[in-house]
Amino acid sequence: MVLPTGLIPTLVFVITVGISVPVTLAAHRFHRTGTDDFRTALTGALYEAGLLYILGIGVIWSIASGGIDPELWEIPATLLATGVATLLVFVALPLWIGKRLVTRLRDTDSATAFRFTTYGWPVAMLFVFAIFVAPGGLFGGDLLSLEGPRACLAGFCGVSLTLVGAVLLEMLVAVGGPGLVGALLLSRRPEGRNPAPDR
Image 1 (cartoon, rainbow, N blue to C red):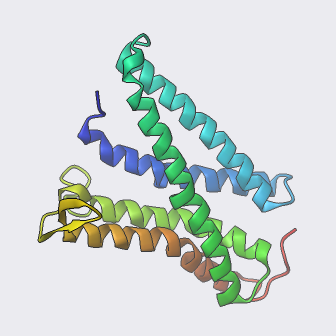
Image 2: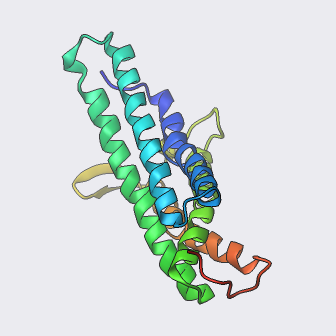
């Protein structure tokens, strides 16, 4: 059994906007209410989101299989693999690259750069989701329905080159967007371009 394709936009929303917005808000709240280090606050928020995601996988599996069919292991395995890939591609890599980008563009300390990169992360993820649903809107087709010239890539034939281009655009926005948005937010900070370092 596989998940219905109609749930793909919902899954993409969850792994982009649905994770980045609450995690960033929670990290900001933790940082403001007692956690001195923003990185520690973000780690705590990500840990909580991960636990909720694993709980959600368990709920989906129990609903899909009635809780008794062990042959439906591919549902939680797919969702778990998606979660791990999301952690690397949509969380760790964008925040690491973004921090370096903000540090270079705004000549600020690493902690401040990381915090503002994190603030830019939900905005970039919103754009990633928008690119995914752009071909048909929220209730029409999505990125996977793109047609156009086809080619063989990495042993897979019949891959739409338009789809490949759109996925590459998504990856560029996902990886570079948080840093660019973070640098813009930092430049608009009232204290000026070189604020005192975060703790």
